[in-house]
Image (tube, rainbow, N blue to C red):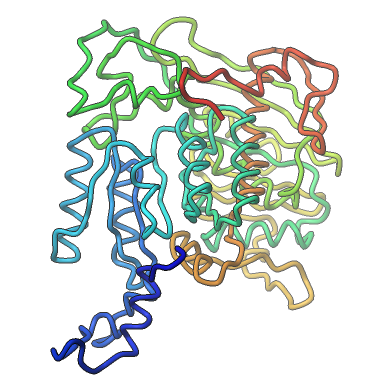
Length: 456
């Protein structure tokens, strides 16, 4: 800011000054100078956390605050209990009372001292918060998926690129050795020419309708803010329950807030790896057809079963299905494949196959598991820890293991699957224009209306 010395510049100057001021001794604390093995305060990444329930508070805050070059200073949530729990966790770690709490993300993002934020709210809030973060110059680690409609994802991509923001998408499987190695085997044709990918994802659930209840006091839980851009619905405890409240997060199975298992609840993780292995991070399929089962009644209304086939311009077919049906697809191509209950990614070539999940890897021939990727072969970027990769990129201003352009492409495929199921017909997709070809109805489904006053 003109005429003022900002916090970082002040600390950098202070670390060089040892002397007196106005006749009094000036002592620089050892932590500021980086003594005792600590990181100088001027080199720390100052972070805020938006959405600090189950994943944001229990997962990401716990993962970020022990990093020696991070200083967490804020926690934001529409639930008072989550805000206070996060504050206690952060203050306890640093041994002070320095964590401020907010219930409105805009107040947090307006703070000039914050360098980066972690966004881990329900899916329908991701992009609105992330765009505001980009406008305020904040680098961001954003939980998957991108959002509940494609138009929002594109708007975020534009904002991140326009403002030069370092962005990490929460598809942390890219920071796992097995997933990277499986993709390298495929990209280097160790299984021969890739022709089929089978993706199995955890499914959504059915849940009965619930009676409406009085809206909680906004000081304890701001339900209107929780709904945000989503359509108004009468309050029920189950609608917006969180795992941090001792129950499964039902909202992930409600279409107003998520696409369910086909995307945010799990599917985006595996679709993202399928894209990586197929070498199509920059594009998408050209044809999609599929069917699925969506509950006709009840609070949950995302697909509980599905099978969607994709055709890529390179000739590869990808089948995305729920885990109950995935095993048949796996064994159709790979007798004796890894037993992982149908949740993983199988790559099939004309000379073998490789399958990978969080349970491990398997391949045919088995010798692939000990294969070496040569220096002149395709070698994918290495990240050994997803949050650490983000922090390192914040410092170097380099691209993360899963930047925004990659995130939007993978996320879009999940939306294509959902739209194919809901329309019940074969769709043609132009990956360059990111539009359906000759289908106005399907194109309208790429965007959702937002409840006032929220808008892209």
